Length: 94
Image (cartoon, rainbow, N blue to C red; front, side, top):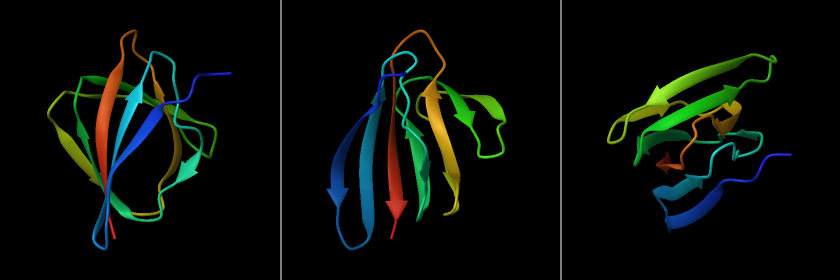
């Protein structure tokens, strides 16, 4: 069993929900489905392993200071595949 990432809610208002996620090595978010469009901004270099519902996995590197967006409906488990802690901020668009 993997340790859980620590989610710290920073803002939750009528327009956005902003959450910081901090992962020790091998920590995971647990399976979840995104109910809103979202943007991720990496605070640290993030070595992410993404487990997908079809049983596949992919490894993605998101460099510190970069961002990406996804549409609602994404379902996955995010794991810190690196050997150092990683952090990112997620902004969900309501």
